[in-house]
Image 1 (cartoon, rainbow, N blue to C red):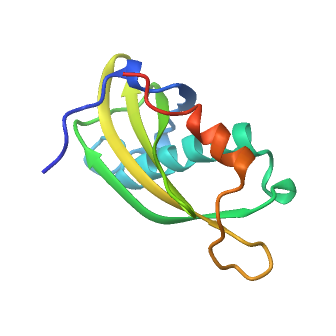
Image 2: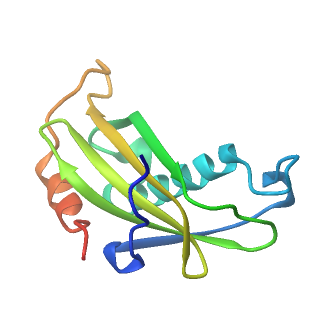
Length: 142
């Protein structure tokens, strides 16, 4: 059962994407795959902000799980605002929560589990202190 739409005030980090005609499906609304791509764009931007570009990061990060609740239809044209918060910080993984908004209306909510890995071995490693501190600053506001 989908959770209630998160309020925009919950999210400490925001990014924005433009809807494209190519994001629509044969029903005339924005396709679920495009919504997944908006989530990915929000994750990529927040991780770039707190950990730098992937080649220079102390650790690698990979998506282990993504859950998306589709709460309402969205139609072209327009813009999407993606709010992101870190809702759980474990020993070698963390969970990001996102709300996707058109205006003030939340049309999708997502949770993504990210695993922190060693670049060479591709095995999970403890979250470095600097990354842990940056994630803590992304805790939900409300």
